[in-house]
Image 1 (cartoon, rainbow, N blue to C red):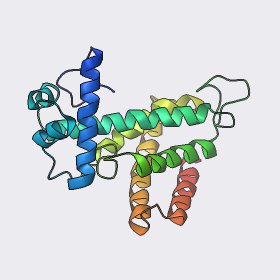
Image 2: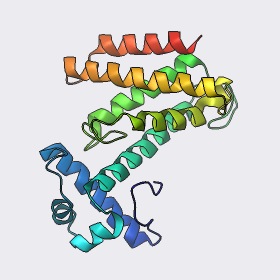
Image 3: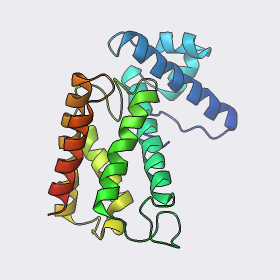
Length: 206
């Protein structure tokens, strides 16, 4: 996890483990009580650490939720990378992990499916997936990270402004449609998910 939202980045293993416990507790309490009721004190109690340990890493609950969102995004991109490295996951025969050209159909399928998979099993993900509730700016960060990960294999220049714009629009559209899918069906409406993939493939194929 990068240092976004953190006052300090842990170096020692004990500090890293303590930070992980704090973020795990934050995620659990988000599921139980929501963002508005989240507090640094409640997180400290749930994590079994002194309140000072929480403040050593975070200035407030917003910074803590930001760090949780960043951890979620890092883990999501790790999952996408691992899926694409599997046999039949998009790599050319004989290519190493993350190497070789990638089909747009495979890329869209993996990106959407791994998001849905995380939503079903990741504590706190319902309220804080890759950003704090009610904020749209995180979608630009998600788009940038996905473009960085996929551009070379899709034959795109990650520095190209139009490529970035298409990824931003795709992430914003997918975010809205997947919210609809989970409002319609707690498990994710399969028809809406399928249409989301179809729309993304058609738009990005241009």
